[in-house]
Amino acid sequence: MRLKTIIRGARAADLAGLHPVIERTYRGDSARQGWTHEADLLSGRRTSLDVLEAILSDPVQRLLVAVNGTRPVGCVAIGDRGGGLVHLGQLCVDPLLQTGGKGRRLMAAAERTARVVFGADRIELAVIDSRAELIAWYQRRGYTLTGERRDFPVPVDPPLHMVVLEKPLVAREVVRTAIPV
Figure 1 (cartoon, helix red, strand yellow):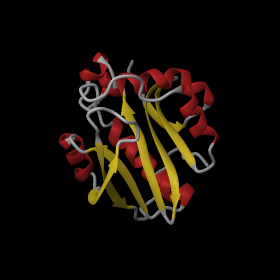
Figure 2 (cartoon, rainbow, N blue to C red):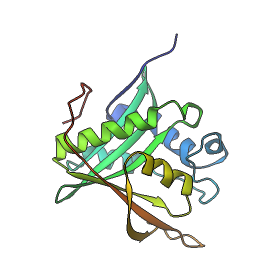
Figure 3 (cartoon, one colour):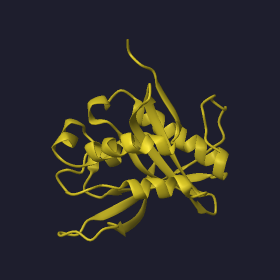
């Protein structure tokens, strides 16, 4: 029997199972099974349980998790930047489950949460500038390059840079999903 994927606000109990999904999605050989990995550009850990716990405890951030039954299979984080702007990050889906629409569903849930919880009217994200396929994927979902370029948040050699994409958030018909408040 195939389990239905549900997207909801993450709980502390989800983090131990979610952390390895994030690492598998972005880093190491297992990440190469998907198409969104950074394994050819970066090594080491992508995040930590402490960072995920901090997101959960921060009132201006939300971590949404996609679960099949009780097993986390993906996530997305958003953070209120003020002035109607929310930042989207940590979007990931287990490499073996990519291309099934879970990433699009997580992004839509993040955009709804940004509007409903934070009253945002736009959402931004940053992508490593050499990731043309990933940038194009976001552009097909309504994100546009802003022209802003940021240094990668962790020093690496050779240095990496991020491009910023932004999307206006417009009020749409409310779709019934669990939105954390």
